[in-house]
Length: 186
Image (cartoon, rainbow, N blue to C red; front, side):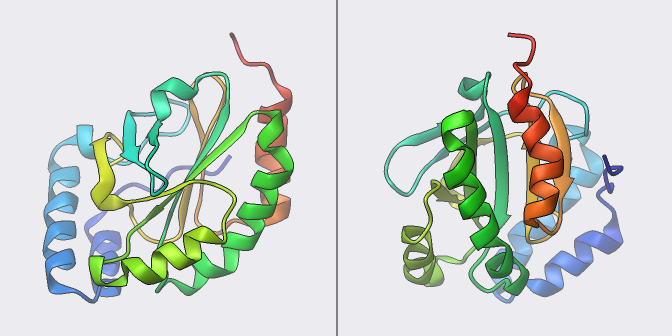
């Protein structure tokens, strides 16, 4: 497992330059400042319990990470304007289709701006896994994503086991398959 990259001012500023819309930059800056001051809003720590995450999915159902104990969960942050996100989505989708019946859950959380929601919904319809948007999160212990794409791996016991910046099929097999084979402590 790779060490977790801390939230830093330099990484946060890089994220802000990626965001084109001024209101999104301001909101993200406020979230980042909160994360730097209050560790309760910092990114999840590896080998620690996953923080709460509750969001309304685009299909109208609810995603509640706390209710998914006993499953391996991937939480993926993405956006339609993010070229690396678009590149990794087919691998995530194929992996989800192959292993969902074995206890894999995945949620894609889009960081698209409201004016891009139509495009985001079109992309989401082509995915087998559920999606949501940052503005549909009602309880967020994950804090703002440090960048895009970003994927957290949570084991069957609700422990954050890894964080990916670039998802590839071999990496998914190496990290996630052993977690799916494990029955956890339950």
